[in-house]
Image (tube, rainbow, N blue to C red; front, side, top):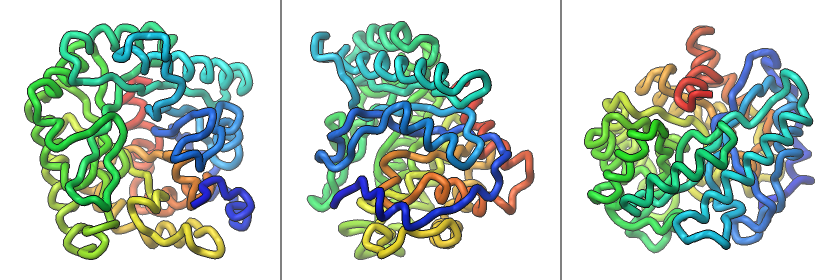
Length: 340
């Protein structure tokens, strides 16, 4: 399926419901194109700025690992440092193009293989040097499932990766050096993540994309049971005070099977909020607003949603919370967790 369907997306236009509230977009990607099997074209600083300035008051953002611009000239474990250097350059562009007070890429989350033992420290130090003061942590994706219908995530994930002594030692190195761990996994793995959080309580864990509540393959055929299992496991993770949650990824039809990708017209914010509202509010109430942050996951979520629709939907879903709680959801939690 073509993922850059700009003519289709243009069929849905919305103005910002609240154009004044400051927003930190806690999760986006940047790349030259060719991602997702060649189905997505370039998404670089100019495209990001166009999104961040087009409707809502996005003041800062956090880049998250996506295998961009790895450095083939370096040793294999150091190749991801090329991504940090690339994004630091993109951040310099946003600073110059946006002017004083304009939106900027304030944090960089890249990749280090946490299984690499003593080499983890070397990689983190290299990221920190390349990041121009913006490097904040790494993501080591661990998404794995026994079903052949579920595609494992990148970074060579395998069963029970987070439970290995090597992975836990790598997480400990992150904590010791003051960096965070972004976790992207599937919801059956949430108890394993809770175990990691308990073994390494000093590391800040940022759980991506609502904890990966799969609705495809066997989980789509038993959707109600899968959602109940996800909620039970999210309560386990929420009991670990060192875990914060990214509320987003809601446009990824390839995992969450909303059906929007096949619609004649992209969904509007009211429809998105009606579909996801109960689950999003469950997450916010379970973790607390001060441990939740909204994310765009652009341009991946652009396969079904426009940027204004996405943030309007979050504003609708957050409308029942106090101004202080909304400040946390839209900017405060991300600012604190990523030390922006």
